[in-house]
Length: 242
Image (cartoon, rainbow, N blue to C red):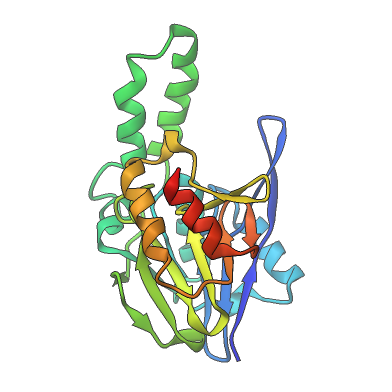
């Protein structure tokens, strides 16, 4: 019997309470973590897992939807503590996770730096340094669009580029559930496209949302916003019409 467990990680960011929702997928043989938070978040993830009755000592795999710092920030720490786990990502994202190429988010930040007002440059430079400090991790296995994996009742990898070129989501047919990473977010109790400022190709992001209409989805677990289960198909259709 398989189970999907959204983890609710609350934290203070610039004086405001924020929340992210990594997800655990488990069955009798596998325990898979999808995305792993900002740098230093591993204790929060472990605590949230224990609250759900899950011990990360049983972790077998980590799937990374894309290489943004809030999704891979604790990946190196996770691998150090649990060296036996397999790290999986798309081929497009691997080069940024393992450090062979500079983070696209850092490239984006550097490209706009000279255009910023002087009073914003110090903060921008701190952001650059934070991105540069993200530890690199080797990827053990590559995932591609349409891969059907036997773990946890069966899961399908869905390429959902836009936010990042190699972004992937995970569809679990048995549960009619999509783990969307940043392909979708929940804002004000509605599905939305992740912050356009941080979506590298908005048109591609909308095409990815249109592709999701091919799946029987009753529930979406968004990394930002949590669980959405209110007439998903209609919400997706509305998004691609915006």
